[in-house]
Amino acid sequence: MENVVGVEDALQANMKDKKYLDELSLNWSHYRIGDYVRQSGATDDILNRLTPHPNLKKLSIGGYPGLTFPDWLGDESFSNLVSLQLSNCGNCSTLPPLGQLACLKRLEISDMKGVVGVGSEFYGNSSSSHHPSFPSLQTLSFKKMYNWEKWLCCGGVCGEFPCLQELSIRLCPKLTGELPMHLSSLQELNLEDCPQLLVPTLNVPAARELQLKRQTCGFTASQTSEIEISDVSQLKQLPVVPHYLYIRKCDSVESLLEEEILQINMYSLEICDCSFYRSPNKVGLPTTLKLLSISDCTKLDLLLPELFRCHHPVLENLSINGGTCDSLSLSFSILDIFPRLTDFKIKDLKGIEELCISISEGHPTSLRRLRIEGCLNLVYIQLPALDSMCHQIYNCSKLRLLAHTHSSLQNLSLMTCPKLLLHREGLPSNLRELEIWGCNQLTSQVDWDLQRLTSLTHFTIEGGCEGVELFPKECLLPSSLTYLSIYSLPNLKSLDNKGLQQLTSLRELWIQYCPELQFSTGSVLQCLLSLKKLGIDSCGRLQSLTEAGLHHLTTLETLRIFDCPKLQYLTKERLPDSLSSLYVRWCPSLEQRLQFENGQEWRYISHIPRIEIDDVLF
Image 1: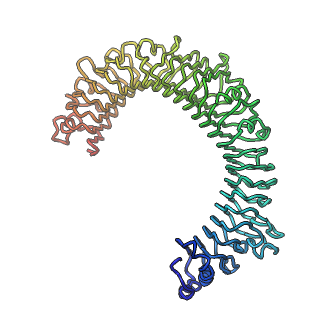
Image 2 (image 1 turned 45 degrees about the vertical axis):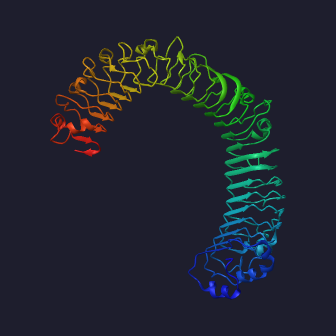
Image 3 (image 1 turned 90 degrees about the vertical axis):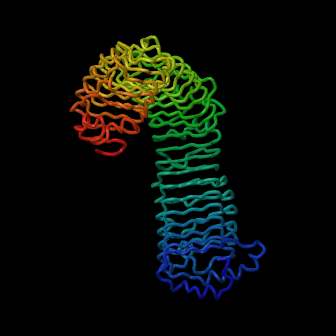
């Protein structure tokens, strides 16, 4: 628009007759500061002559250098306008009478540095009429109104904003006074960087989300579902009663946790990126709380001991994610503190050294899942008699001892704990699924004592175990095993026939990333009479499977062989009729021998209903 220099050009545009125009954007890309005073009158006239047709639905005006908005902006005749945006109109000191626009649903106002007050001129004729101002407005946003000081709410006898659902006020550092008091339809309120804004009363019965960021607040209570508080100081009351509260980067968060303002019917609380400077005298969390998340907070050794001394009667999900503490040891009785806890996670918490969870033997808990991950200072975990479905302990590089006995645990995953040793009582006797990944000290296979785990059905071993060349040794694995995955054992050379003979129930066998593996005489799979699925993947030196005895696997249904570049031979005999699917990929030498009709081994596999060779279906 800076290129339009005369009123005649604006008249020739004939905007008022363009009745099919739905959207219009008028933008001044730049203007020289020294010129705007001299040209402001002409600019005002140009915009006045660009009156759109009343059918217009969306309008945006940006960078307007004039002193006043045109007479037509806000006129009641624009009954179809539903969206309006005014931005960077810094020389205008008053807003147009937008309250008269009957169908306006979305209004965004930003970078209006000349506006000091908003009052009756904003509401227009509706401020003194028997009709509500902004009767259809659903979303209202003010942003970067750096000199805005007062908002006079004078929406007439019928009120204002009867349909407003979202209100956002950001970066308005001088704004004081009150917001509209009665916003019956408001669902989301976002206040950010408005440090002087004080709202003593706020009636928002429909609200479900509230965000307060970087400001001082004092409110009375109503009801909502979600509140976010960020960088807020001196908070004495919650503005509304939330079902969900999110606290982020707040000073004196200890005081907030001590106040009775949290004694409300709240279900979820998240505390993020806060620093603790002292230990709270008490932690007054609501007794209705079901989810508690603490993430990326510092000096948690000042909070957690007090938190773990309180009773949380209905808490179901507890997550401590990131953050730091100084030489922290946590010890608590789960039934006394968290009688209904189902999920408990500690991740990337620096400084925690010991974790001891106790419970009287024979007293079941609700705990279903425990996850401890990335706690690099953690040395000792004690979980006696703890009954749950699944425990996952990952990436704890200093963890030396896991004491875990008399438990009905069903699923245990140990990953990248290179110094870990098991307690002398070994693993829980009722264990059904076990994963051991990258735990270098767990190489003395007899010490695992897996043979006594008569309920164990799934076992995965990955990484570490650098001294293991033969697997599984005799009497290592129980006959109850149905799933076995051998992954990334760098020096594994062969499978132990005697160890496999005991796996009479095995249905799935997966062997991956074992670069030294060979199937030689005596290392065969023919004893696996229940096997249905077999996969061999990324075994770089594997040359032949003829000694594996695949033709003896009369229950085998799926065979998958991937990324074995030196593999040349699959079988010397017809594969079993039970086999329904064969997949071979990235094995160039073998693929030649399995080629349709012409391959040397095609006759041994041609009866299989589904054959995929290098993504080609035969």
